[in-house]
Amino acid sequence: SGGEATAITAGYSGLRQALSAYGEDEGKADALDALQHALGCCGVESYRDWLASPWALQQNASVPLSCCRARRGCPLSSTGAHGLHPEGCFGKVSAFVSSNMFCVATAALGLAVLQVVGIVLACLMAARVPARVTAPH
Image (cartoon, rainbow, N blue to C red; front, side, top):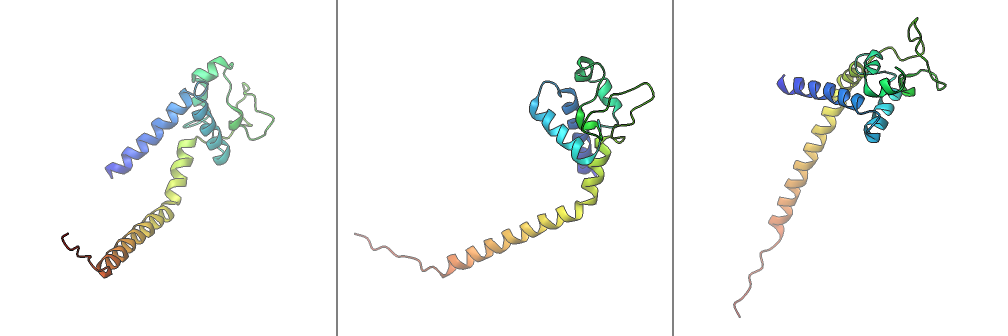
């Protein structure tokens, strides 16, 4: 659907922006580090996304520690990046959202039903309260 495509595009561009602002915006850097660490991913599509980022150009073409499988770091070598998480975060986030969509939809529907029940109960209570007629002074 159109809304789904817009959300996917927004998620992709959001990850790209966070990667571009990694060295300048601490909030985005912390969020991206947490995401990469939790999902075991690196970059938007792969670790190569980092190599062209402004942060990596200042860090001698490196990747953040959150991309590494081990805590001690993972230097890139000419033979490849064996210690890095191989998958990009966009695919992992998309898969996570897709696999949990039923739970999200169920929770949203449950909250909507709860709201309707609250409105109905409030209306019933309001109908039982007698109207006060004030006599003119």
